[in-house]
Amino acid sequence: MILRTILLAVWLSIAIVATAQEAQVQRFFLDPTDLEGQVRERLDGNGDRCALIKVQSAIPCEFNGDIVGNVAKVKGSYLVYVCAKDNFTRSIDIIPEGYLPMTVTFADFGINEIKGGQTYILRIETMTPADSNRAKDEGANYLVINITPKTGAIVKINGQPATVKDGSVSKFLKYGTYTYSVEAEGYEQQSGEVAVTKGGKTIKDIKLRSLLATLTILPETPGCKISIDGEYKGEGHWTGRLTPGLYRVECSKPGYRDRAESVELGKSEYKEIKIGPLTPSFGNLNVNYTPAGAKVEIDGKQAGMTPDVFRDIHSGKHTIIISKDGYATQRKEITITEGETLELNGGLVEDVSGSYSKSTDDGNEMVYDYIAVDLKPWFPGDDKALSAWISKHLNYPPDAQEEGAKGRVVIDFIVKSDGSIGRVMVKRSSGNRSLDREAVRVIKTLPQFTPGKKYGKPVNVWYSVPINFR
Image 1 (cartoon, helix red, strand yellow):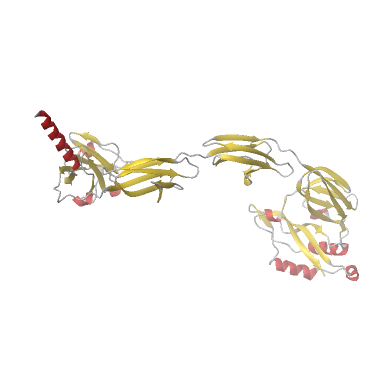
Image 2 (cartoon, rainbow, N blue to C red; image 1 turned 30 degrees about the horizontal axis):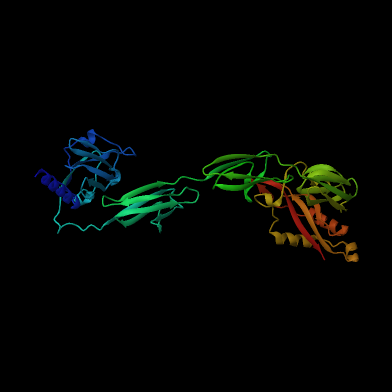
């Protein structure tokens, strides 16, 4: 008899669990006489008063929604605080133990606005509806996966790609257990199993672990250009994040031999490497120019007089200026190759005025290349006006006409910070001294330019003009 009673009790227990049970809100109202919302005041994250909802239920409950702080149970009621500022909270989710979860929308009970410091009463009653009235269980629920970082993640559920929007995946799935995988470039893949049940939506928060390594490169030679696998990264020193793997780090500087090292980075590793001093790279320059005794400047510094061989010049590009009073100055761009001697032969052209006045030079003042300034110097009008002015004032030398000489002269000159014409020099000769002298003369007579500017201030700027004689 006792055994039969026990079996009957077990059967009844199973029947109750198997039957979907529901709970409902009996009443939800503002109780102006209950001052507990003020006495047990709670503030939200912005320092504003919360509203207190006292949930009266005979069975244990859990709560979800815009709830501030922990839910406590006092004298048979759950104290649920919600944000009230700007009517922020409009509903809460209640999950009674052993019953279906429900969402309580305040407006359904005539409460269109909740107020901070006020107390609201919400009473729950439970019921087991008859089979004919019971809502059909769809046999499915939501799975929500939240991913950090929010961008670049690829999510698969049971091997099938899922849509990721703003770092989240939301899928309505049948009850059961599902596999998931989350991967993103530079992060460790995560995978596992998750169950979807009738007890409420399933939320899975996944924070991917970064696999990126941090690399700091410290060259011992100042001003080095740093490249990684051929990609330029910067000058001086560099710190950045890279995916694990093997990299080729290269440091270079004009006038020095490149230096490269390999570095292997592991997952989430920090590594610092020092690149030893670069080895200087030198070549020679043989300047065999007439007349003898012409001054040679290399990159703005006086190097000596012609003719001469200038040794141990750093390889790379340099600017050479050859000048002497009474002659048109020549300016050349050269490239020195390591271990080789560059031959520079030629002669200066006599200045038409009989002397080359040092007053046209800018002394020790800085002169910028044309491409290095923020605002270029310009001739009144435009480039066409400049060409027209030169053509109008250019005289074809009679001796050159008699010889049938023709050619192209490229003139470099300085537009000074006040717009006047400074140093004038032949950058490329036509091969005829008369033509070269006439080109120098006409450039010296140019009217005032609008000066170039650097950082908002007028500066001296190199300007180049080709002149054709036909």
